[in-house]
Length: 305
Ligand code: CP
Ligand code: NVA
Image 1 (tube, helix red, strand yellow):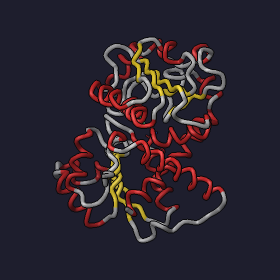
Image 2 (cartoon, protein in one colour):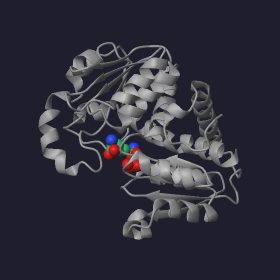
Image 3 (cartoon, rainbow, N blue to C red):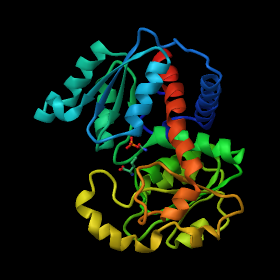
């Protein structure tokens, strides 16, 4: 049975993920053709964010308005959550007002508890463990740019963070090979790696050297070295990750025509050089645009089912 909530990509079949990507591509074409949508008219989503956001917030709001629906944005620090009202009460109250909840928070347990008590769908808009909506729109971008998913060689360079974990789960479901280069002590979640490897059609490989991951890769992903909530580690991480910058020299090892993706925000001069970022800017900003089309597909799928 397809889950009612979108908490992590591993909860879905590869066919279901592919159908969401295909639907997002249709919605993108329709927007470009000036088609107006109203299928979520009369629906409201509540967005509860405990961390900052530019793209995810704006693209979910644009997606919901673009489908004729309405959005209620709640910054968690302005709610009673900040004064320790239990999540399970917040979930039950919000379920009475809205048709879906989009949540950005710290622990994966938080979205799991909200989902347990919510009577409306809960969509994970980033936790410390996963960023499923982002990786789905990134794979949509990979399909657009590279023409296929399963046959592509994907690399991850840097921290084994929430994005890396969601890429691993996507590889397990969608059949592309994935090589991640992470420093010792900064590997992705071990349980996620084991579970995804068990169902993956192609290898999901962990290496130390960025060059080993980038070699012959078609798609190379990078992200910040210190994620939201890790600000106190910023200085230490600059040191640990100093040899993990994706730059023009490293890119020479990639397959001809390889693309670089970055979920943004980017720290130029850290995880990616300024010149490589600008050389790949078309892909990176298409990737940001695709978040809106993908979020339309997700809102449609989860609110109308
Ligand atoms: N990529 C992403 O999730 O960006 P925001 O933090 O701006 O939402
Ligand atoms: N890994 C980053 C992603 C930001 C979109 C973070 O969690 O801050």
